Amino acid sequence: MNSRHCVATAALSIFMLGVVASTGFADCDLPNGSTAGWLSWYKTNVTNGDCRLYPGANTLVVQVYAIPFQKIKFTLPDPPFGTVTGEQWFFPHTGTRQTGIELDTGCTTVGTVTLGEISLNVDYNLVSPTVCASWGGSAAQLQNCTGRWLPAAFESDHLGGILAQNCLCTSCWQCARTLQPYNLDPPDGATNVPLDAKLSWEGMGSLPYPYCRLYITRDPTCATGQDIAPYPPNCGAFDPGPLSPNTTYYWRPFWNIDDGWGSHAFAAIHSFKTVGPVATTPITWGHVKAMYRE
Image (cartoon, rainbow, N blue to C red; front, side):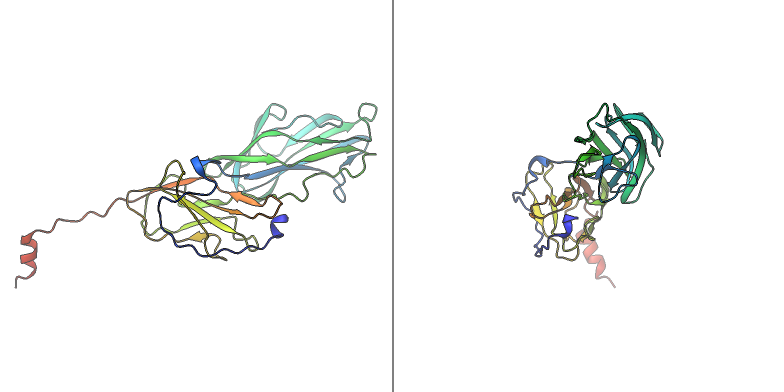
């Protein structure tokens, strides 16, 4: 994928929580992060990305490439070519594909999950064999394994007739299918977090020479904060140094490469609250004198 096209370096930043203008995070925009899953489909027995349909029966396989998730929902209208003769979904589900379907997959691992199949019959008396038409869905979301709904998206897919030259299964074969970082720790909403806690996450360390970034703030509006570059190759953890007691922090890891391919990924904003100050017993003059008694 194009996320492999770029090599970027990052310098170590000194961590000081102050009122510093953030870059691109004002007012906590994108609170649920960038795309967490990409929905697509392919034609069975496809060769070289050729998604031209032959007359008669055809089968399309629906997949999602995503971070670990436990539910997914989306709408997907009938294909522009042919009549749907049946559909099979491989997980328990509610609703319909045309008006909104939700599948319960159980907690998956990161990667590609096959959701189901759609069967259709192509009749060239109804659809021109020379046309290559776009086909995709909308309202896509997935629920991560902690119960938070995150944005998903459809790749730009096409279906074509037998005479539709250069009709590929996807018109986005050079687009970045980047996924947001996941498994952030401390988890979202954590309390009593130690003052020496380390921040960690997954989903960025496997990228070659990623341009790792971390945003952290004590401002609930995210209008101020710090944009930090953890020193590579450590792209999955950061030591913020001593944290303030009884304080709520807002943070997320991200990476952004200006490579012209749209290579970027933002985690959802997470928050955690540190433990309160350590209780101490007041020291009186009597205590001091007692220390020196024989």
